[in-house]
Image (cartoon, rainbow, N blue to C red; front, side, top):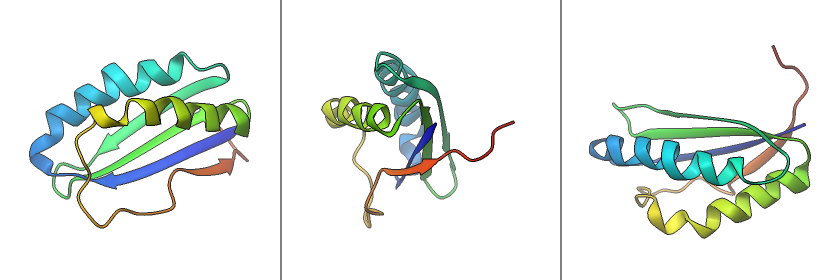
Length: 97
């Protein structure tokens, strides 16, 4: 299993737009990719910090998820600089509860 990890920082006033995008576009896009297992996103309203973690059967599936979400990226509110890079990052899952 592979974890796909992304972060970003956004204007906290965009919370509702980011929540809606994460639920309605990001999650449904990833669910349609073979090998998808789960997705969790969080947003700190005070700092504007976003984190997204998805779990995939293989690294190839995680990369396909990245390609799929990149195609809809223009719908997501633009992040504030500086962007953390390189993102996304992929990690092998070593424990799960």
